[in-house]
Amino acid sequence: MNAVSSRPPLTIRMRDEDNVAIVANDGGLPEGTVLPAGVPGAGLVLRDKVPQGHKVALTDLAQGDVVLRYGVPIGYALKAIPAGSWVHERLLQMPSARALDGLPIATVKPPVHEPLTGYTFEGYRNADGSVGTRNILAITTTVQCVAGVVAQAVARIKAELLPLYPNVDDVIGLEHSYGCGVAIDAPDAVIPIRTLKHISLNPNFGGEVMVVSLGCEKLQPNRLLPPGSFPIVDERGADAGPETVCLQDDAHVGFMSMLDDILQTARPHLERLNTRRRETVPASELVVGVQCGGSDAFSGVTANPAVGFCADLLVRAGATVMFSENTEVRDAVEQLTSRAATPEVAEGIIRELGWYDRYLDRGRVDRAANTTPGNKAGGLSNIAEKAMGSIIKSGSSAIAHVLSPGDKLRRDQRGLVYAATPASDFICGTLQLAAGMNLHIFTTGRGTPYGLAECPVVKVATRTDLARRWHDLMDINAGTIADGQSTIEETGWAMFRLLLDVASGRKKTWAEHWKLHNALVLFNPAPVT
Ligand code: CA
Image (cartoon, rainbow, N blue to C red):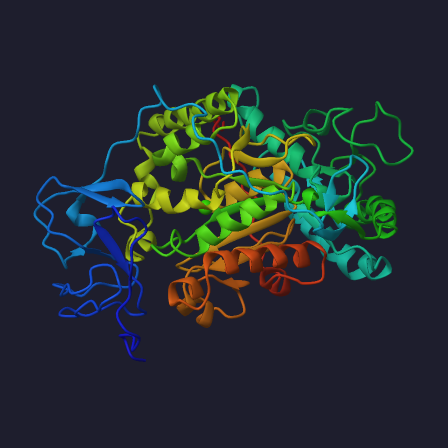
């Protein structure tokens, strides 16, 4: 394969004030390339080979000069960098994080967008008013000890029972590593416990709650799901705890009796789920979690801006959009607090990011621990640069609410929400599920086959090269924006329409097609024992 693109050299600058641009061409551009008229840096001769997605200096930079991308400092030159040079991470000193005091509070008046009306999808309405995009039986577990048994029970349910209930999409075990061997009374233990509880109540599970417990674990079923914290849909009274199969029950004699018990318990839940039908509901019932993973320098140029445009469309349609990833917004905290709808929301953002600063500090790291070798190979020099490209996913709406890790959105919490989570793909997705996510958008530049069993994941490629190679893993190619084949607006609209199709079950995502499911990964900042 030709290592160097045959297309004319193309550079992309995000803001007029930026003194670097990134190289868009597949394979990068060789030393000696003359940047043509009409692109940022026109007339410059490249002094180095510059890989795709990497930065080229548009002006001569002296040692100590600020390097601007997205109109903000992403670093300071460690030595003189002549125009036309490759500006890589080893040439930059990262700026320090903005202190969390004296921030602008709710100062930005967000653009007034016309409400979007008339958009609907076909979803499963739940008793609490929420809407599922899938009709899934989820089996809650209290502890990792039961995971193997539940996995075998799920396999038998799929083989023996699911064919009898054609309106049920899937059966899954909510497996996790928590439940015992943990300091369950530590203050921070509330996070994993409420996360598990709230995942059990995700709109895609139809309010059907059944639990498999071991018996001797610290996280007892009644502690996980106290009476009153979940809907009782069967004949049991309101004071009843969750319907539970306890493996240590004396009644269980032999492994098969455990499996039979779980299958027996699952049956009425499947019967009720099977009677449900999709109905037309407004697009405002979407609860969309957005995140990125395996990012490159194109993430913030193509996919994330398209997601941001789509997020604005969703908010205009009355839907809820959650963005997250604490370490990837930390360098943009001023943008967040200034976009907060109210001072209380801004204070909530400061509280969550301050808590996270201290959490990282306990481990003697800071936000800079976020970037991966792949991020850097993809052109992202440091977390300051990555953050600016990440936060674009949130669009331009005012931030209406803030959630702590593991919290569940209330029905009256609509619009753009900052759900404070780590940036880890699995932990972020798990916490967004707990918050009530019924649809997930995931952007990637390096490429990841990420998927969740609990909720459809729409994956967006940042580059055409990735979309071409991973043609049966990526649902949308935002690389066409860099190719000049489509605009951010066109891609954002296509994404919005695809979301309605996927939510309605008219289309499956590639991750659903291949059954690519990552594990639930709980965020447990408390000690283990
Ligand atoms: Ca992530």
